[in-house]
Length: 93
Image (cartoon, rainbow, N blue to C red):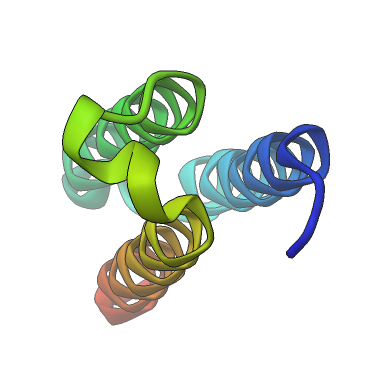
């Protein structure tokens, strides 16, 4: 299992890169899409908060099998980041 610190750093790095991509998209998108990009950006920041919180504070039920818990947190994070990326890419220029 990866180190918890590494898991948090990976999540923060992925969000950081995604936010940079959102700002690039925001700079070159028409004014009609800017509101949608800002919504996606807000969802990405909320995803980072929720993921780091889940990594820092596993529930008492999940402490018995931490390896499986952190694997599920990681998989859910990656699924949500892919979903946000697809939402961003679906916006037309």
